[in-house]
Every structure is written in C-alpha cells, then in structure tokens.
Image (cartoon, rainbow, N blue to C red; front, side, top):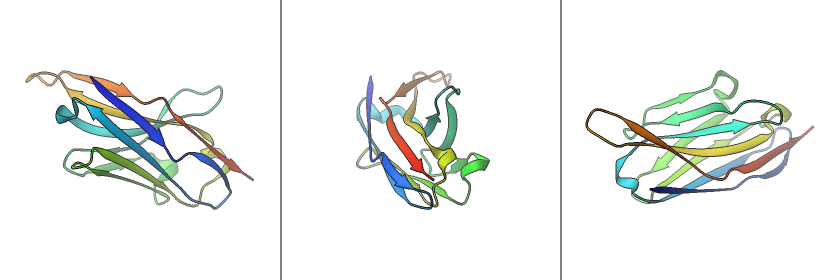
Length: 121
C-alpha cells in the first residue's frame, strides 16, 4: 500500500501563491505517475497536473502557465507550485499516486486526504 499526505493548503488573496506538498510512504517503489486533482463544492474531481516518473508533465488548460508540478523521487515528495491564484482555483486539492501492479501494466490509484485551498477575491 501507498500512503499519501498533503500539506500546504490555506487561504490566500487573488494573485497570491501557495505551494502544496505530497509526501508518499509505504510501497513507493512502483509508483509511476503522480498527479494533483481538485474538487470544488458541487463539482466532480478534476485533474490539475501530472508528472511521470521520468519528469514529463501535463497540465489542465485552466492552470497552464500558473501552476508547476514537480517531484523529488529520492525523498518521495511531490509538489504543486501555484502562482497567480484566482477565486475559481478554490477547491480541495488531492494528491494521487498511480502504482503499476503487474507486468501487464495494471495499476492502482492511491489518494491523499486532501488539502483545502481558498482564494479570496
């Protein structure tokens, strides 16, 4: 099993910045991708950004140019640098780790408990 713990959420004004962290423990050796998702009240959970084991990154259109995802494989840490925050970024942000479970490529998703980000206008 993989355990994920997020930190770094909080209240910030429009235009401000926050850095979210995700610490992974347990069977981290077979983690492939790390991702950040967000879920606003009344909405479905949405993918924000993904970083592969090799460092390739992808972003949702809404955050391109403002958010940066990164990871430190040696320390089993993953980050989301959030700049120029907007009220519509307000949501609970979840860390996701996708672990490969067999040679056929089957995977299992692991989730953190979430951290609240609130951007005031």
